Amino acid sequence: MTLDRRTFLLGAGALVLGACTGSDSPGTSGSTTELQALFSSNRAVAAGRRERLPIGLLSNGTTSVSGPPELTFEIRDGSGATIETVTVAAYGDAPRLYYPVRTTLPEPGIFELVTDIDGTEIVQFVQAFDRSEVLGLGAGDSLPAIASPTPSNTLGVERICTRFEGCGFHETDLATVVGSGQKLAVLVATPAFCQTFWCGPILEDLIDAVPDHPDVLPIHVEVYANTDTVNGNIADPAIELAPTVLDLGLDFEPSLYLVDGDGSIIDRYDHTLAAGELAEALARLSAA
Image 1 (cartoon, rainbow, N blue to C red):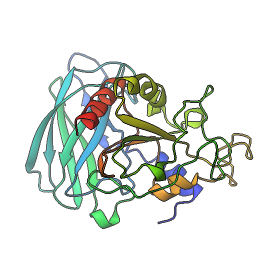
Image 2 (cartoon, rainbow, N blue to C red):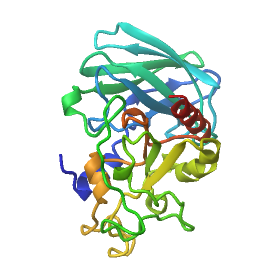
Image 3 (cartoon, rainbow, N blue to C red):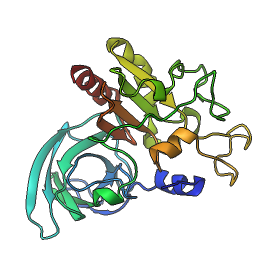
């Protein structure tokens, strides 16, 4: 599927906000806690595949500044039957606190993520799609030999890194190392043009983390091809996506792919990723 600029912008904003129930928390007059789905609702969740579904908290409609150290979620199917119960530790610091739920939704359809906060049951809905309908690549898929911009071959991308000082993760063309035995951490993100509060300093955290994992090669891919041409206005109709992003089939950012030496994607982290969870992810890749 070919994604245009408008599709990408819609996907980037397609976090499931407000698709949950909340009620007054005991002891806090008029206070309402809700769940905030920090994953795309646009055909991103595959049935039958272990998925990461990060969940944030909202208090009275705004991002919560605190939350319990862990939450237990019941995963319920359309009939209300519980198919799995998972306890999830919190990651990140306020106000970017979140809970990365891991579950396998067995078939296409609507499911519920149900938790309890201060005696109040709160529900977040999630839709799983048939694998043939899901956009992009996920865990278990093979990453094709997709080219990525380098200083010597920018692939037409005007700014191959929008970090002010550059990140140093653009020297290697992704196509030359996929399946070569080299483990990869491929980050699709645009530091200068992040569109959501939850993006966070993912590239900065990756820069800090990679020295502890010398066996992992980081590659950073910018989202947009012609930000200079549109004077930094990514809402301009003339904005174009970078060719690597089109090849990956992404309609949102940021997204981090962990790829083993055989070129298999062992995991993917979308939308929000705190330093602690990133460190665990890289350690798991190193051990693979």
